[in-house]
Length: 448
Image (cartoon, rainbow, N blue to C red; front, side, top):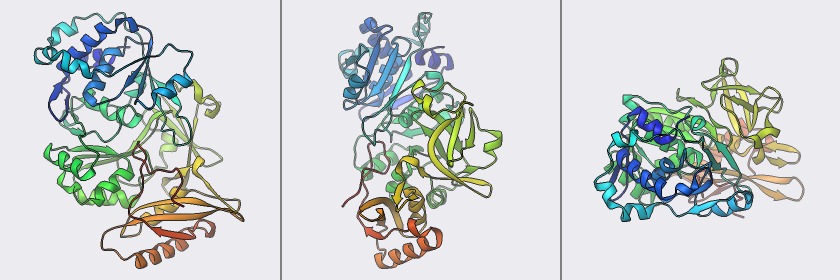
């Protein structure tokens, strides 16, 4: 197994990382990685926490330490404490990101080593580094799951079309979804444009100016971008959704705005890796996949209506309790079969108990989001002394829409589409919904 640096040199790709002040070619990133590896040679076969600051620095770290360290913990400053707490038996070396390399070794950027010299480096001593990624940690401490470069790149592709893509960096690169984008950029020889601001309208302006033509984001992030009325200025050719349920109204809106674009929703998790990609612009996935499987995985539905997945790669040992005798992992995602399609209903852990009946918030949200004029919706349980919980919905509507009309339509549609105990007892109009750092709708409970 080769390291990330060796893999990229073998493929002879030419990815570019762009930030506010300059752009970095693979040759420049590899030159800086060589300097960093030399400086930290004492970390050979030791674990290391690599702290993210920006995409170029992070790439240098990955290129330098994959194949050198035994373990790479990809993290933010905030996640470092959880590594120390959960892995106290390991000798974790936590070093600041290589920002100083970009300033102290400016000559390396201006006059990088030639690729020929880099290729001549022997990699016979390279180890198979385990890459550790943290779950989103929405309930309690984040958990860490191990991957290898091989498992992380099972679904990365190379083609001339993919090499021409210019990706926006919407995810945190130390999280699974962000790392997938970063590795796709590197392996396909594409371009990554780093964000310079948290202001969404300013970011979309930046994407338009940089001619970004590929974005991967959660459905919640896509809804926020659509609400700005600025998204259409970005010349998108590839649209990817992941991390949450991709509902049909959202897929239709994106398809209408970008009729020629490739639109894909990806089913994946930090624990198991990429499961499958749906590219037909229809919510859910074909029921035929349960029989024929998908690339790199087999699928089935268990007696609890949970989707189970058996990936081609080896799963983290921590997941043993969720894996059946045939090697299928319980994803904890509830699904339903409808005709020739399997639809996602929501996470088992998020179920609301209403008088002994189970309500999946995402199922109710999908009904509400199908109403014209609704931009975003969040459904949650409000504690009740008699029933345990009552179902409540917070709703964001489009500008110039009448709340009275929309709330009446929502109630009528819910009565039509949902069982009585699933229907929200309270609808609240709000200006915006909070999102987690991973770009998903924040499920930490509601506003009073």
